[in-house]
Length: 306
Image (cartoon, rainbow, N blue to C red; front, side, top):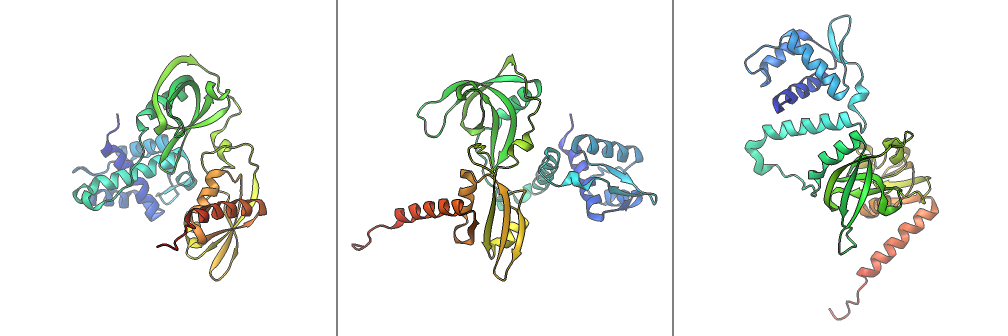
C-alpha cells in the first residue's frame, strides 16, 4: 500500500520536470536534496527509476531522456484534459499542498462537498466486476425513497457532486443518471450484467454540458456573446470542450459550441446574468428570454405601499 509520502514523491518529480521542461538527473538529484522529499537520503538511480515506473503505471505519464541525458515528459497530453489519471494527479497535488498548509488551516477556506462519498468504493468495485447494485434512492421531489436494481456503467463528477450513470429496472432499463448524495442505501449484489460493448463513457457525455443526458434535445450550433470580464473567464475555463472563440471585439467576444442545450446548460447561461447572451439559435434565445421573464415576474411585486 502506497502512503502519502510516496505519492508526494511522484507529484514532486512530475511537477519538477514540468517546471524545467528538460532537466538532467544531476539537477534532479540536487533539487531533491534541497527539498523535503529526501528524508535525509540522496536520490539513487534505483529510486529514480522506481518512481518513474510508478508514475507511468499510475498516471500514464512517461518520463524519458533525450540524447543529451535530459529528462522530459514525452506525452504531455497525459497531463491535460479530463482523463482519470490527470484528475488523480491534480487531486493528489492539491492534497499534498494542503497537508503542507495544515499550520494555517484557519486561513484555508474550502468548499463543502455533499454526502455520497461513502458509496464510491462500492460503485467502483461493482463497475469493475460487472455486478448489479441494489439501491434506495430519494429524489428531491419525492417524500419517500424508492428501491431498484441498477447496472452501473460509469461515474461522473460535476459541480462537486458525484453521479452514477446506469441502467435501472425502475426506469425501464434505460441509461439514467443518479446523484450519489441522494442514495439512502446502496449494496453490491452477486448478480452479473453484460456491459454494452459499444458503450464509451466519454462519447456518451460528449455532446452534453453536464449530467443531463436528454436524448430528446438535439445537438445544435450555439453562439454566446460574453461581455467583459466574462470573456476572459471563458478563455481560462471553457464552458464545454467544444468551445471556440469565433470573434473578438473591444468589450466582448463570441464563442461557438456544438452541444445539446439541456436544462443544466440553460441554467449555466442564466447564472451569469447580463454578462452572457445567446446569439444563436433563436430557439435557445427564446427559452432564455422566457426564463428571464418568469424570473422578473417573481420580483415584480407591488411596492406602492412600501
